Image (cartoon, rainbow over all chains, first blue to last red):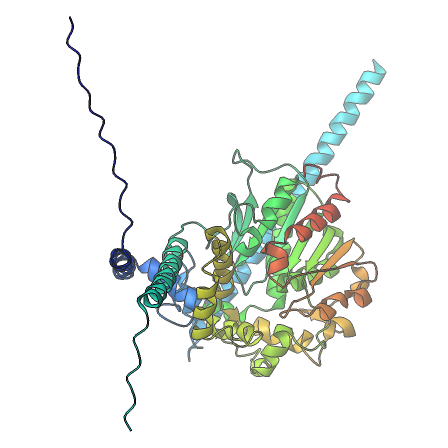
Amino acid sequence: MPQRAESFVVEEQPKPEPTLVDRWVEEQQQWQKTLLTYMDSLGKNEDFLVHLGNAMRGSLLAGKPYPRAEAAAVTAAETPADDRLDRILHALHQIEGQLTDLKLSVDEVKANARKRKDKKKHKDKGEDEADE
Amino acid sequence: MSEEPPEPAPVEDRERELEAMLALSRRSRARLERLYEVLNSPGHYGVGATPTTVVYRENKLRLLRLLDEKGQPRAGPPVLFVPAPVSRYFIIDLLPGRSFAGHVAAAGFDVFIADFGTPTREDRFCDLEYYVEGLVRRCVRTVSALTERPAINIVGYCLGGTLSLLYSALHPETVARLVLLTTTVDGDVEGGIAWVAHKMGLAGESYDEPRLVPAAEVKSWFEMLSPGSNSTAGRVRDLWERLDDSPERLRDIRTMASWVDDVVPAPGRLLAELYQKFGPGKNGLMAGTATVGRQLIDSTKITMPVMSVSAEKDTISPPEGVDAIRRLVPHADVVRLQGGHVGIVAGRAASGLWKRTVEFLAAGSGAGDRR
């Protein structure tokens, strides 16, 4: 006769409801965890400091530009006494623009000429076919 | 006569009080955790939401062309967005699902955005002519050449709308349809950024010896429009109270706030010229005396279809000053929407503006059927 294996079912005891003191202790630990996370990010992650500062405007590093914004966003300088270099740079930018205008005009002329040529070719082809 | 010491509260009362304090503590902690999560969410500021390619560069300007899901430019009618040069361009392409430009592109248009970039010292000499006859004109010409269309659609926002309006008066044959968003045309209407700048001393800005007006100063004019919103205490209180909202909503708010904060410096010569020509008491557009370089602006040349949109609660461009376009361009379609200056473009109810814009643009092109 086969031997019958005996099995025991251990009934889980319902966990006792944590007391008010336990819950306060746990809450204190959670606060410690949250504050440590903040302290960690504030110390190690400068982006976080920038975001936090900007969210509060006027505090912390709020004056710093957002990441990807060019640094010049906040480094607006006063007019220098000798601004000849700036005037030359500005004039160069204007010349750059005028050259682009010239290039665009040449491209337009080329494109129009090409269109006229295509149109003429198409027309001649049509006349040849009509003659045949 | 000595007083009896107060009787200690019953144990039940003290426990109830501690329970209430525990609940308050948990709620405050949850708010801090939510703030942490929101501040650590990447990719929701700084650049546009839609993939783009740069098709033209000049000085700080980049002309961006929106790409489709396959990374290709769209083939529909071209639309050029012209944002204000004193703020960052990405307000019109803010977030995935919250992008004005992206919506217009998805409706079947080939969308371009002019990103004026961040001016540096030498750019303080840039004037109205440099922007209108230079940057905007070359953007239009480039879009025209790339898309092989002699006339394109233009959507101008705020000061970008002013540039677009001036450009359209000078080169009407190159503009198919013009949309002006919160663009002030009547400088005598009180309130708004022009008036604040006037009160804060813009009149003293020199055209001949301009300075690069620092971003902080430009920002202070905007902040003057909503007193109290710029104090650290007010800002922190507002932020703390909003932290019960969902993280998605908080991210939206933060994105908008980060854009408002992210003002760029402004060329002093441009501001001086705008003030001298269009500011309070000058009002060159309405008076018919406005010029760009040596060219007089003739508003009767603006013959293309025009839609002008104002915002009911706009403190930057008061709606009365925007709607005055009726007197300048009588055939303009004048629309007033609920919301503020930024809200109508990128807020929760912005879809109303997007829909109206697509309908207006599609009326002249046949595109816009995809939505």
